Image 1: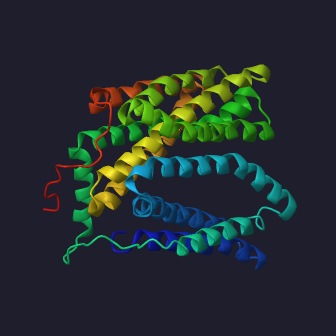
Image 2: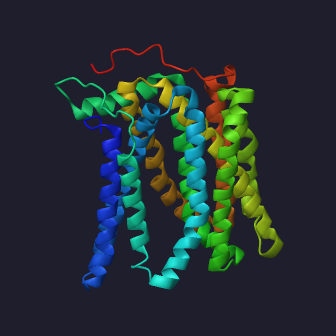
Length: 349
């Protein structure tokens, strides 16, 4: 990704997603749509999303002054949370009106709008200077080494990977838990899951205020230590009034995670050297998101062997224990995260 300016990567990513999604209704209209095509489209959409999300982390600091990064990240997270709330409902309505395949046209249009908006950004966008003799594997190792050697990035990345593994395990059995164990109907499942988006909106609204008042390092610790224990409410969920446990648990945990994500994202963007930011973000996302499918397999195996509700209890306790990774690192010793890395060594060797 370092070969191209991040805005160009974002535009290409959106146009790629547009073409992939458009291929589905086109194939359906032609009568040749197959399961194989849907699987390939889903896989390639994930790849395009990985590039786009990494490029966004690199592009934002070139558009927004360093002192405004936290506010910008909170607005991005808030917008994503609003979309999480409104998206499923709007998607369901479109599917009812247009059919499942034709409803994808709205998604195609959204990617087209994103690409046009990015093309309209006037901020100069250039790729960082890179040496002539490039080596992709060496650059990947450079990003991983930078994360591994830095105590702040190492702790935050390990915590993200551990938390995502537990979350992936929970998400793998969540629908089964709600439908079969609790007895929620499909419409109710959609409403319950949307509560996570409401928590994200709240967390995005509070993130800058908490960081400014307490300090960035303490904001992360406070958000995680105060919010994550509410995950213990989720296994208590029962039908009827007992659904309030699920809503409260998901809402508070989502709010806390969003606060820490905003602070961590802003820290990474200002802390990492410009020439390493893309590789550091990619390395972190590889480790964090690579843990999700591992967790999903683990969650499915535990749910099958021990029972779904029992597994939800185990995962809730495991997620609380993950916070120990943060407490074992340097965050508990400082009020503010460092603004800029001052100890970059020659990592490309």
